[in-house]
Length: 261
Image (cartoon, rainbow, N blue to C red; front, top):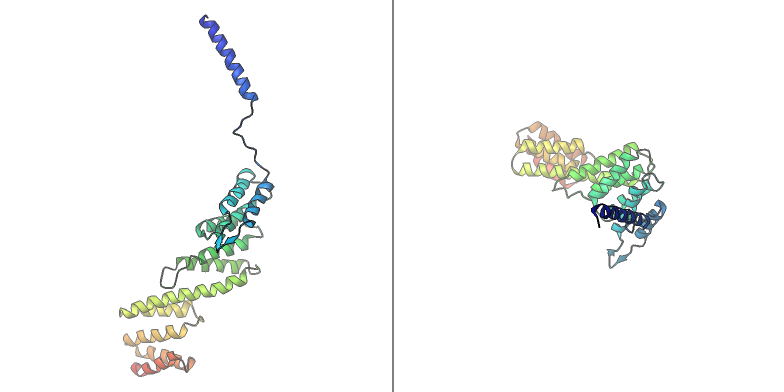
């Protein structure tokens, strides 16, 4: 067959092949269910979870995938915003605090007027709260939780989450105060009396009324005694004797009053 005829035949075959491909269904294309259906599937996956011998068998990852499909494919649907919140809650339920923090914060930033914003601020604080360490360790997460609850209480005082946030706020402040007391104790043990005194004064000034005032006062008086600041030490011990009569701290202060003479 001449080259020209072969070229014409090949071209004709290509046209027929393309036409056949165009008319055949693409098996790789999968029809995406409606947004409401995807969202409902995600909710059902969360509700179908159960506890088996203390283990949560909820398929959180599959549920998150459904909610993410809603967000990716139907970003303007009425359930897309709810899907964002469901993802945050799913991570929170799994104690995946970094992920829950990211989603709760992003929700509040993207939807500042949404009625669920106070809830997301509270859950942000709770995500930090669950990462808060004991007073003898780093208190970054404790401070972040406290700041977040401060923001909730100040901006949304009528939110239903405020009552619980206020109780946790007191707990977190007490932990920070104990942290500073422990640092002061370390300096006191090292005979670094000025540094210790600074910490004890900080507890009295920054965290009053948490049940630690007497201890901080007494230890500040001890520092002043060692620093030869007799009059200031005497004044502190006398304050303790007047305000904490009958306590162990008062008995210890009584023993040190002569040392301030």
